[in-house]
Length: 164
Image (cartoon, rainbow, N blue to C red):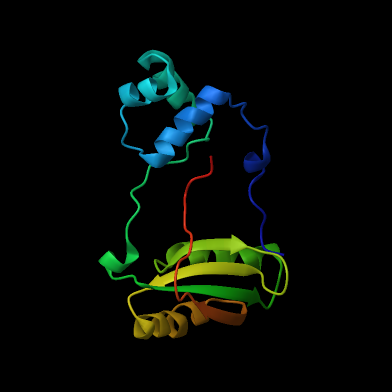
């Protein structure tokens, strides 16, 4: 079977109190909020808010700060979900496939899944022609590839990054 997530991800979870959760909620809505603005929202002074954010970053609760883009405005309006099965399921073969997925710019998400397929990819492309080129010249060239099933997204009903 393809490789599992590193053990560090299953380590003891940091305890989060209601103030931590409120800070995280603010940052999910707008990562550019100032410490002062967050402090006003969560009813704390700026120093403890700053210290809490630093702790949340250091413990990996906050992984990164990012800018969310509209795919259609950056010529990536075609979204495809690809289900992929591998021929071999040993650690080395799975690791090679995972490394290849990290290298492909069109693959914006990759999940190791259970069931009939081994992986689910979220792929974005400019057009059907660009996706075809990706499929034939990049994805299908990956070692150990068994079966690929492509599902074309016709519309996005809900898409969020908000966890709390």
